[in-house]
Image (tube, rainbow, N blue to C red; front, side, top):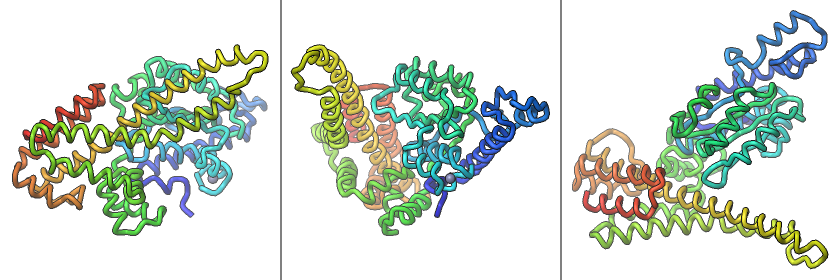
Length: 424
Ligand SMILES: [Zn+2]
């Protein structure tokens, strides 16, 4: 039975550091229990024993002791930032202090139901200040399970500035038993503010090698080895994407449509057609992914608000209801936009993989292709375009991703990219 770190693929160094920190955190709790001082950092033991105080202080949450209050997990998408954060949270709540994977603390944290672990998964484009203040407030309460209050913020790069400031205050003066785990693509100031960064310990995750991804697909998901190998390579180190490709025929169809783009670019008209097709496919994929959640949420809210009521007070209730429905619609729209951008970005990553294959083939570099199923096509491209032309095309795809990230309208960015891919 693998422990809670078993799903963290190809991240041996990070796992060693997190295990050490979990052990240090458990030692802090044991020291606290021994001298009955639950709040260790400000510890004044009830016994008044000076020696115990010193012990407690050295075992407190100072970085050199192996455990600290605030962490940032960085790495490329799919490297397992949130998987690492959740596993670490489980290890902190584990009754053995190891992340055994079997005790109630581990189980409930991994299952998302532990009372002292909050996972913040932003659905819109940013995490607002209201949400963050509420979170910080709750995080300051005493852990009901007697161990730690853990707050995991996925996509901490999507904090608004005001939300970041609210979080910073909590990190600067952390409640003694509260641990913040942030996930972000990198520690670049665009992703995470310098002041927050300076208060956190950074755990860098790497893009896991395809062999490690394939291995976990076989072991954990029971996927056939040849399919697992293909999916791991095609997903370029993104574990979740690899699993989807291996399991979901629609995901495979969408990928094939994207990889057909280079073949279809035969003129200006075709380039614009290809741009439209790519945008519309992303919209369709995003819609499929959010429609069900939207409908469920709306129905739940309407039921909660007692829609259709006619009794006394119903008019007043409906006025409040209209505001809540509007709020829900705003949130859903924001989530839809995000889902579209994510879908489009996945398509662009696939496309970049194709031109990368052409480039490595033109250079005769001894590396395996990303997309084995379009390797022949990439080879033909390599002959026609040479290394320079392949590189220009790869750069056009990457420039498109950067433009969309910088809020250029997706259709405009994709059209510009298609023209560049056609012209070379
Ligand atoms: Zn455990």
